[in-house]
Length: 298
Ligand code: ADP
Ligand code: MG
Image (cartoon, protein in one colour):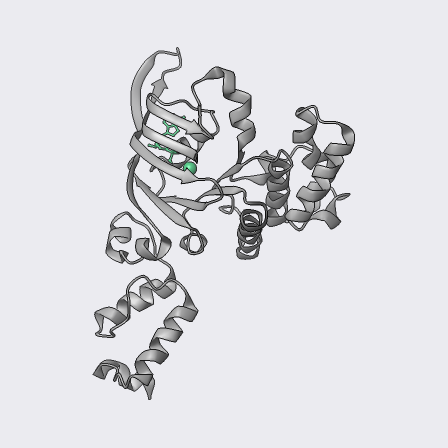
């Protein structure tokens, strides 16, 4: 069964004036249908305003479809009876760790969620310990969150969600405010959680590098799902992505330029090692670079 299934979901924001009268409406989602399997690591890509956050809020039952239906672990999000179940099944992590962290000590912060579930103290403690270990922050358990780096804070926010044992974790641009090291830490943590604990990861991002190792990728534009596929298939379409105002990984761009110059490389190269390997293969096959490249070679 899918952990998330969106069937023809549309959503319209009502825009109000200061008196609360509806003066306008904005269609943020239009007929979005997709499925995410339990245990998958998927990414949602899209330029600003493409509807990613609006969609994420539907998975966590913060927003409800204006049309269509969203099922989370088989539960219709509009079925009020399942609201708490849904929020516990699909945990959310947002962009700014500072807005999510309220505790004064790391272990207390991570314990909030399980405590609210009404679990016994020993179970809360077990969960706090294992959640902190799974994000590599156990040694910071007695630290004050405001002494941590952005990447560390975001890992604490993730631990707080993980301690609730969700089947699925939805992250809305969790690395947007982090430096490259913080970004790498968070992404590594997510892959570990996915591989070791089989937590489904739905990562919303506009950093192409974060998409490369995902199982599957959805691309949104103007509230619609416009592309989907494995990362290497998505990145085979360099022109298509550029038309959506999305960048491709540097190495993909380089490979694409080389293809245009006559290098017979395969499409959809997304990793540096892959490009190196393919170039060595060409060299061993006796391929001669086009004239303009020989000087560089020499
Ligand atoms: P993304 O996360 O991809 O940047 P959003 O889901 O935030 O996109 O926004 C999709 C569209 O909905 C945009 O046109 C945005 O301006 C609009 N929108 C988002 N939030 C609101 C809101 N609270 N009220 C009205 N319009 C909104
Ligand atoms: Mg957003």
